[in-house]
Length: 399
Image (tube, rainbow, N blue to C red; front, side):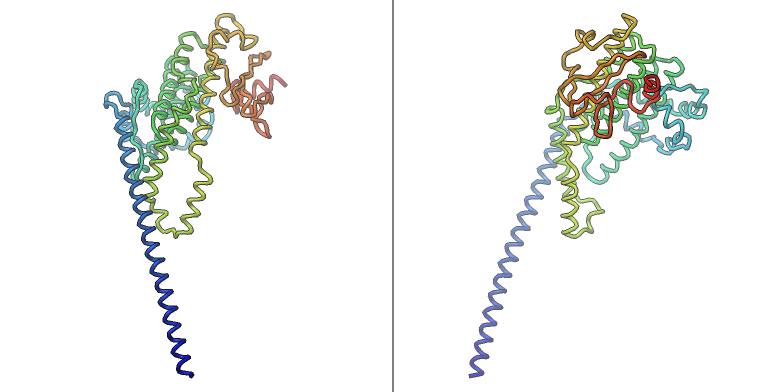
């Protein structure tokens, strides 16, 4: 009796083992099939993204003679980033000479440094005379490293241009100074022609630096009609072409992400599955390329429209000797779109003051908060510019 039960238990155990073995085999087969399908899908997406990116690059191609990128590459080949990291650039000169006119006698060391970069300035001006620029789309790790180096150099060139322009303006070389700010604006346009969000954001920073300085010149400087014509010609489009302008950039961002995800940066190769999922969720949660670019796009568009308004205001002052009582006085000289704030589809605020005027946006909430920003207020002042000595001077005068 005991032997029979033992045989039965043994037979039952064999059945259970066979059952679990069969289930494990089925699970393994399913897992292998799923892994294979995912691998095939990923490989297909990787190859498809590569083909589409190659097609986009082919569509963007232009002759070298028309391509400003060729000149930027020449500059980058001889670029010495350490020459832009000298100590005196990081102190008082860094805070003022990029924002306001200055004289060589006040900053002799900086003036000498500028002379050492005259060749770079001439090459940048040469590049700005070309309308088109086609930089390569960065996909693999080496190309991403090259892009980082290029963007770092572009930032240094932008501040070089700003300092040189302000030195020209500070010493009465108005046309030369404006030419350098026009050059900076054109560099921004070149960045906008690249189908990556990072390039667009760098271009937006460049254009913001240029527009802010040209605004100061238009209001406080000896801005004649020839100068206003230069500025107006340099300003980019004020039309809201978001759908058209963003479509190729967002497509390329998605394609590049697929390629980079497959290649995998070295820093992530040691991560286990859970860590990779956490990294993926953090990137998904924190990064919305469309929203980032969308906001930057309208910030730039708003600044351009405000700059066009400033051009019209200065033209009115040149003709009449006074700033206008309201924007109605310049409305006939502007297209209706320029007077519309793209952030709220409302109007800009213009107020005549005892010592000039104020021009600001009511921000996304479309509430007039007297040009204030922070502590719940989101107005943005174009004149006087935020965080400037001009603004402090005007505020002191109002007090």
